[in-house]
Length: 338
Ligand code: EPU
Image 1 (cartoon, protein in one colour):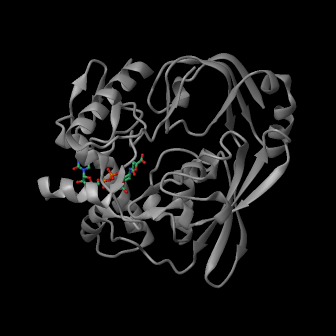
Image 2: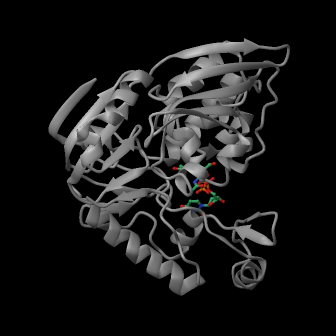
């Protein structure tokens, strides 16, 4: 376990925001986490557990303890004729795990290639891309309860997964820390290349295999999404909004080319990137921040921006979309106020 005082969070957030935390603690095992939770440091200060820092925006210095897991390890626990059950430590880099699965010919996560972040965060926000969500392959989630230090295992249904959501983001927010995730992968992969841009990209490959799907997803992401080490960003800044069918139909009359995804319950999801582009924001710069030129859903730090610069840009975009489409955009990124 390592504890640092007044530590810069610059290497710990992909937006590249230069703020400090009063304390930063990194731990290496479940046992260390349980010990840590009993210390006065954690009892007397507020704390925030981070993963790869790829889905958060620090608005100011963090006056508390930032916790970060270094629980590593990828372990095959059980193999059946059709499936393999793999336990992965919360601190493992997500894409290292995807690369491992593809190399071993375990199917299910290839569409989620190159998503930044660490394994422990994947169930929290139910990461998703190109027609797949991680809930499709999560078997169970191992956690430690913050209050008691007790271990608890959540089955997939208990996690209450939804679009970029789970029980860990609402009822149980801040109450449990994920230490490991068990994934159920397929030994006879059914490849899913139906998502619009992926179905086009995969045509460039002679065969559809786990590796070619991974390569195709990586190509699309590298084309559309900025590399955080070069241009600070946190992927999609907003959620794709879900509106009532009546509202959607009224908009569709005015904008017949509007892309959309029909949902189950008389609702329709509309890509926020399209709405933002229609408002003229794509590629626009405001001081040290900008809307990415290849994907309007991504806000970027051109260098030296602070959290408020990003929030101001986000507020202006939200106002434009509200005025033009009567739709309220919600940030997908977690905003951390000091
Ligand atoms: N579009 C535009 N202009 C833009 C961006 C998108 O018109 O600037 C249109 C596209 O032409 C397409 C539609 O919007 O018709 C959807 O675009 P895209 O496939 O790029 O996906 P998205 O809905 O913008 C979501 C996820 C991404 C994920 C992609 C691919 C959310 C909030 N975002 O974006 O996830 O990679 O689908 O599956 O659901 C993330 O969560 O950080 C993330 C990058």
